[in-house]
Image 1 (cartoon, rainbow, N blue to C red):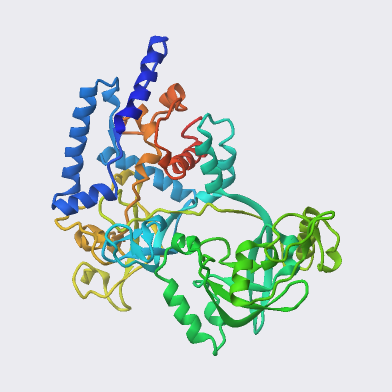
Image 2 (image 1 turned 90 degrees about the vertical axis):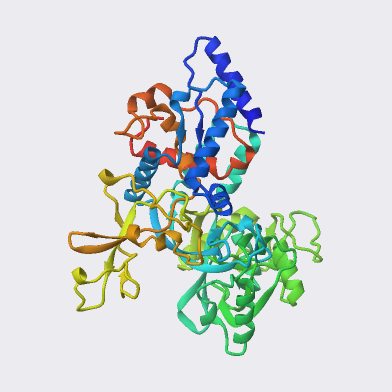
Length: 532
């Protein structure tokens, strides 16, 4: 399959050479990641050995095919010099405030020893091997790609890309203009539930509020009578991935026994929890308007909840109350907003909420920040370390955190970037690089590498590694200047060759690799490292 795409780029490169253009037609190896590591584990061979062997075999085959690559520009994301500059870019992201630690609810598979993407979990089991998966809060590095959401969407204008790729990125970014609304909670004066909606005009039709099972206020809101039922429901949903929950045809839920207060009518509104609401998306709470939302209508019918009709068709159209009316129309049963058409009602109700400090206009994105941690061996070490503290009265010079039983605390809240002069931070040699069941990752077992002393104090290196996408975010820059030991790439070669004129790749890269690479590129542009 690979030669088909490679033939296409080779045809174009030969054509442009024949028309007296300078052509850079390079090749390289995106060689970190789970597939290479899993193969190495299965065969008992170090991933570095199998990676180099596979690269040599691929290279032999490509040369047999006669492609006109400039082999002097060859790169591999696993080469130490390449890793150095991938780590250097991470440090620029960190210094710019775009890389930070966060507690993230993830799909942890103890048997595979790693975090799985939503797409890799089916009915609470790993897609590969059918191993049980748990939802756990883990300390993760996160890249704040959402800060570039507007620019990533705007940057699609003028790109000569297939329409399917463009649409996929637009949908993945998912820019949405709407209203944020605050509901007070009965009995919890200091708390509130915040929801986001694109249909503020339907606010008078809210008959219940639904929270994600993992919403932080679930336990505080739940009444004593409902506690056991809610706890059981929360436990039963904890092993299911986000994708699994949202794609399920049958919606499930449980009443918490608590009530929200409608911000405009002051009516009590029952609070439910439902697995179709995700804690990782939006605010983790939704206002339910069954009369004007199909999902809410199905849920309300199943649990016999109230339905209030607050929008009618324009003109002589009749309202069919056997199904949700989701089109635009004219407001009814909406107090002072009766008779307003949908768009006018949206603006008027949003303005009213802003006036009474119960909400206001808001832009949100479907795009989530990029979880940039893997609990595996075969990836770039994250160039961060942390102070190690010992109990009061213990002299740091007299203890060794590498020793079994040595009581100590790693201060993850005090991250320290590795000095750029000390890059690359290389992986330790390990005989056993299998994941294990420790969410800290297998590098936590490499104690001689993890712990080190500096100026009389102990420190611990980050044991998460970067995901396989890291090296592929910027390889096209390194192709320009692959032997430069002083810079990731020179400004002169950036000026000569960038931007890329032709990229040939599979559609599966539309919303991951291509989006991540555009993000890194825009950051490098902002920092002045590229002019394009």
